[in-house]
Image (cartoon, rainbow over all chains, first blue to last red; front, side):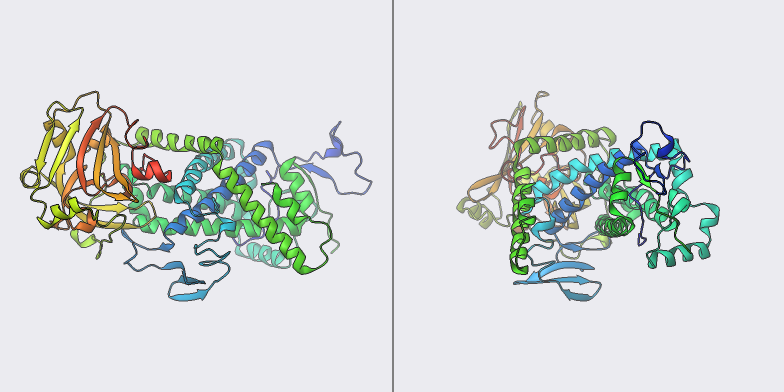
Length: 295
Length: 262
């Protein structure tokens, strides 16, 4: 998840035609010598990106309010106030703290106690902003459907259209450690691919997207289902897979943290790689290839 | 929600303090805007579609008689915390408790051919089921305990429940701020083999804090459905007209979902 994915969910459509070759496209104003505008992000990818972005934000924000109802996490088959948590966000008076794996970190003003509110997560980041577990659950379980249905359809699209095989799967040469290490170094120097290399996703970017699609989204949905006592009764293997409901809740929270990290790096990468060009490509599909760097 | 922008893009703030104030004001307006969205009846109606979808889908994909997971004694919570109302505290209840509930009776009425009054001694001698299950609170914590009691289905059959009855309502001795606690379940859950009226917990008579002398266990739903201090079981065709009509205290007063399967 810690990669700097330079582009907002482009389809990586490797079609070689540029805008200039498409009659009627408003690209003739591209001045001579400008790098070409390519149609890179297909409509289904763009639609899914935005539906998914909305549902992930609502899920994270309502999820933080749900977490506020019992801001402690456990491993195992049971876990309540008198059992031993591995993570607590709490407060003593007006001092907030985060306790994680035996270490307590003061977090007043951010977690535990912030905005004059003794909630684990402060009003600014929760849905709704004032404490309401019931309302947060309504938001969470309505948008859970949006997330589930859109992710399922997108997954089918990925397979049927070839997007997965063509654009997301790592190419043979990209799978070597030396290649990945090179990509990591390039990202660390904030040197993103240019020219023709920018037509496709780079390896770290692919790994980040694959991680969201095939790890974070499925695991967050399955751990969510594991917390349902009704689904738990019908499908007891769910709790067996995740090691019990409290463990599933912990993993659910870790997935949420993974989404938050992804979003942070993703948005940072968008800003560094040219926010307007990136935004245009995820809204309209059209992307201007960054000019080849002079070596 | 767009109101915040006026706060953030205030013209030429002359000092950092002013700008910060503007930002804080913007955040405040943003929150106010979001809360307006949350309070909108249209939004609430739209979100409740998700609740209906969840209820329908869970009933569709789950076996109606699927049993909640049962555990061994070794897997039980060392301490099973008490929560919610922990003592009805009324003089009537105190009098019953003082006499170890010897004078307590459970009323079974509503749409039944033979209304019943069942004493605690009769409950003790009725066929019973013992199960070690996980109690999942809506807040997110879980505790594993052993429950023993009389299957609700047996009692409803004994009372000759009408086939027109759709719900079973549990009237309780406890109340919050003068509002009595109650809960309700549908017939799928009422006749589920693990749905019992428990007299015992962890091998002992129910403690007052856990709902003595009788507590509902609906093992495939969340904790707030597990009504404590049950005094009366009523079979009804509709939840309309019973208290707030939402089917339970938390449903009526706090907007919690009636179907607590997730």
